Length: 100
Image: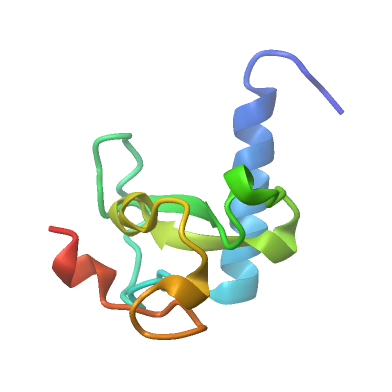
């Protein structure tokens, strides 16, 4: 695997494409559609890759542990496990409404 300039970005992009094909266009936390045209770091409603089991708690970059989320929803969730979020074990909460 290439480790040159841009290699990390390509790997993350390829992972995001796989996860989007698997899960669709909705944020796994708030269930609202993600606008994939919002790509800048300051675009809070743009896409991000969220770890179901946070990396700080032993989560990995394996596809099974990754979901698409709005940047703001991902940031609001922090390192909480899905079952500890309001809305139950699936971790599906209206984050987009309370994160603003």
